[in-house]
Length: 345
Image 1 (spheres, one colour):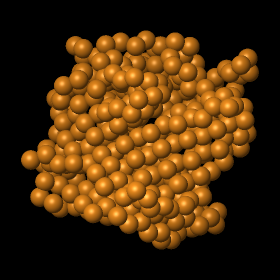
Image 2: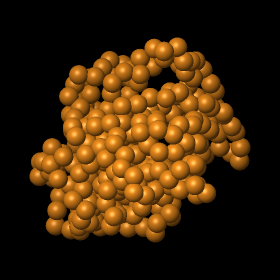
Image 3: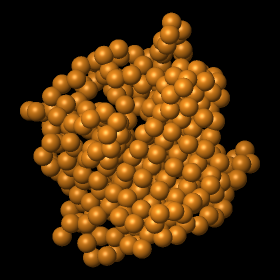
């Protein structure tokens, strides 16, 4: 088990960025940069022992500092969408940046993924990792409260990458952090043959702008039913614009439990996603269009990767029947995610 730090470049405004690379005895490795607390790679062996990176992204800082669809990003303050870029909290209305049509998406114009975080590596108890910290000041992207936040990445001997997000605030504020990694377990041009199982018997339906209607409906009898494994290609044609839905997990709130399992049939690689949050978003790279030159110059096409983003329900600040997303002074926000790799014969 080892971790090393290297320079990753300098942002356009002159801030230095480092990359921390963790590797365990099985050859599973992960790299995280201090810009955006972004996961830039997750490497794992296939059924033949061939190690490859299973995430989409870029080869250098220029790609991540430019416009991109949140490859590997730590998303905050609020992952997913907030309707009409507006919410009310304790009688005060807050107007946010409308960066997704008329709605607010993934923290706004300059979310957590566009900031440089302070970092400290560690090795302990047969694991290694890095703690990244930043302070989001009162009024940043027009959110209330000064928020002190940490993102801890830990690689373990059992091939799990653990991500723990924690935060405290001095004023009530919405908070919903996640990691937005895009995965392709087989390394092909698309992920439609990947076999997905999501441990969720219900979901939050959305309107044409991908804003929840406020309902929670069963997945049974719909193309969103992944309670038993299905290849993505089987039913994606029945879903307008592809999968981009929040699944309500069959788990106890706050419990770290298995949310989803995905198998890459060609490589045999298996990704298991665990979370303490109540939902996970399945997104199948519907808006990738080949215009981005990614790793090794690869042009990422539609359905070139999938995301499983553990989080709270979308638009929670405006949905009184959804679980609360409000962090208040004296409370500690904590969200743990595990991306665990293995192989199947």
